[in-house]
Amino acid sequence: EAQVTQNPRYLITVTGKKLTVTCSQNMNHEYMSWYRQDPGLGLRQIYYSMNVEVTDKGDVPEGYKVSRKEKRNFPLILESPSPNQTSLYFCASSSARRDTEAFFGQGTRLTVV
Amino acid sequence: LAKTTQPISMDSYEGQEVNITCSHNNIATNDYITWYQQFPSQGPRFIIQGYKTKVTNEVASLFIPADRKSSTLSLPRVSLSDTAVYYCLVGDEEGNTPLVFGKGTRLSVIA
Image 1 (cartoon, each protein chain N blue to C red):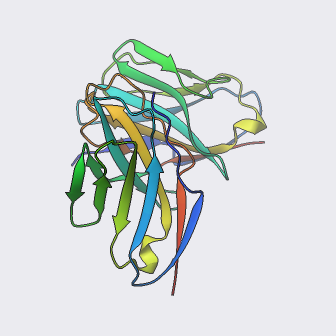
Image 2: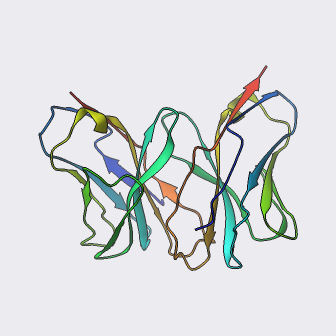
Image 3: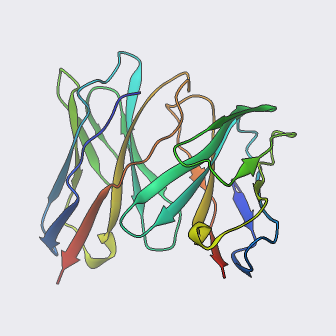
């Protein structure tokens, strides 16, 4: 079954404590990306990756890091989380071709206190 | 990267046909038009995609005029379960552009 798996689904952490949200896909997709969703602001792209070892900033990259060492994994790293990073996060993957659909993970609800 | 513009929200009664129009004046020759649906606290899911004219599947229809500067997602006979946010995206087939979602259109279906 085609899947994008994010972990954890829910996370409460304290300011400054480094955390990683994992994202894995089983479709051999080249393209992966991370989004955050906040009320009234829609889905904003944090980082994206066109392929292994290729990453680019999206619209809101500040405070986040990513890596793409393997095709299937695209972790999102918050080195020093702050309360303004409290949000709902989604990982997505798709074939490089845009005439195919993108698949999304179940979401990670992060609260930074 | 072609920018898209959609209405922020729409209301409809159950059983009616709903048309959501997306404007993409700067669409490029190789760009496809794709629509996604998102329910609260879930990731978006693909609804339909097209390049020109009309595309229909079991969920919706997509109408694209000849100049391709806009597109209309048509949902026939909506039900309460169609209440969601709908996003219009434009991107080229080679995937040279990132998948950028805007704020979408929040559709509320009323009984």
